[in-house]
Length: 111
Image (tube, rainbow, N blue to C red; front, top):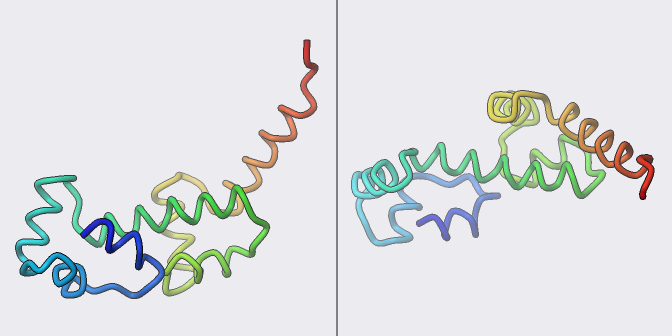
């Protein structure tokens, strides 16, 4: 199920689709996630999407709206709220902080 979610994270997935990918019932899918990784399928999907979004913030200059859309979030506002809840800062702050860290390392004297 996790592989299916990773392969289809950009899509609006339902619990029915996730369960069907493993040929199990919705309740079995929920139980498997709760007992295996202590997250619901929805929580896992959001965390996976956020990790992919963070990667894009580090590696690309795409707009935050484009990243939100590319990683399966229904809106940039929802993406920003979830990102801040998970990382403790907005996507823009995250990107700017990463750029500042890279610049600081580049400007540091090398022995």
